[in-house]
Length: 204
Image (cartoon, rainbow, N blue to C red):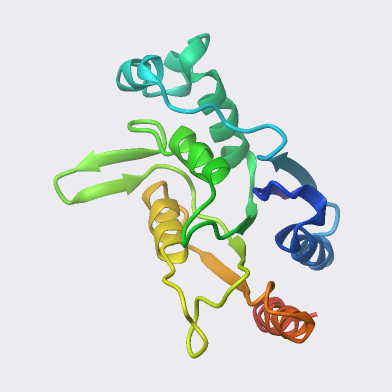
């Protein structure tokens, strides 16, 4: 039975546009993966711990799940990594905050991108240690960040693609939900385009 890990990042919770589109995506995945088990993590409700000195010290000395077991500073990291290891599909919904990922998502990233545990450093660069799997990322924004209407930089999609690849997740698809604060017409058009992207990638 496949497992889908859903991670929502918006402080607005179920009212967020990214969350609402993730609901639609999950309904489509339920048809594609009948009987799938769903793990759901709401990062706004249960945020990941921020990296602190104890985490840094423990990270370099406990690079396997066995060695990290029972180490308080790595407890959050191990829980979040275990969720990733269990999953066959990743669904990530997030708003764009100030051109990049929100703080809740960055804290999660810092907990799961861990030296020796989810990636290894080599002379040729970092090598991911997690299995690849389909990852679907919904990005919502009040403005436009893709051409031809882009009026702001996008430091989110490239960063997320790179950081997920660092831990081994390379099969990443982005669904962009843009122009949400530009009036009703732009809002409707943003949903229309995002739904078209989902249909193209996961036809019904």
